[in-house]
Amino acid sequence: MTFPLLPLAVLVLPALVGGTRASAAETVPSAAELRAAGVATLTGEWKDGARGDRIVPWRAYLPAKTDRPVPVVIVSHGLGGSRDGLGYLGEALAAHGIATVHLQHAGSDTAVWQGKGALRIGIDMKAAMSAENATLRRGDVVFALARLTRDAAPGADTPFAGRLDTSRAGIAGHSFGAFTALQVAGMTTGDGAVRDPRIKAALVLSPPAPPVTLPALYDGITIPTFVFTGTADTAIGTTDAKERLKVYPKSRS
Image 1 (cartoon, rainbow, N blue to C red):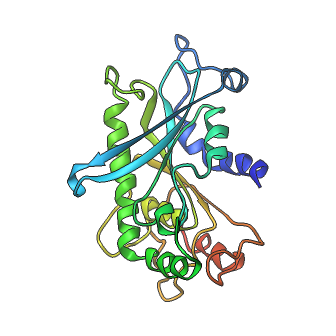
Image 2 (tube, rainbow, N blue to C red; image 1 turned 90 degrees about the horizontal axis):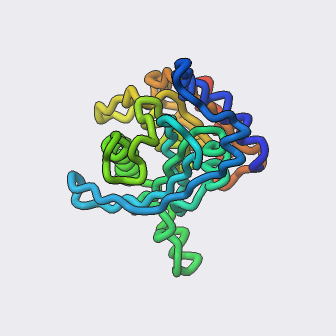
């Protein structure tokens, strides 16, 4: 399934790269040059002091060759996943001039199932799909975008300095991560949260089915949003692809 995702993502990403036109004095590497130069991978973790020193591990994929700041996509993994997830998407986008930063969400990451028996895994996985973890995940994305904005400033003593343009950011996620992406893209959450204007597009992979009793849930999503799922993907409980695709017609994107 890795081959089709890049063309699908490219349908969303013009919203990010639309501002990359260079003046005559600037040099923007071609797609061929970017692919030939390869992809730089960085790994680390941040501590969010505003949320009780919550640790947010991350892995970044950046174009190895670029002469100017590039757009960035924040990537959110599914339930039980990690920052290692969707690495192929990160590599593909970085090879086309778009950086990705893959977050790991404590409380709904690999710790939910690693080293546990089957019965315990089932119980803990279900418990991890909570409103509390959904809020924590959204907070991770908001924190990461603020941190990247600071770390990407010219002259900052970080590996991101001068390499990212966080004014042109996107959000992508799979399964529970797709729900995170929808939250960040403007989904109504009941707590007054609003979309960060830096988020220009969303890639939503196999999202949970929308609650039928909340028809206005997605009214706040007005940015370009690509909703994608597999016809044989039935991993989210008993929800099938047809149900999950209902997210798209209910949004205004």
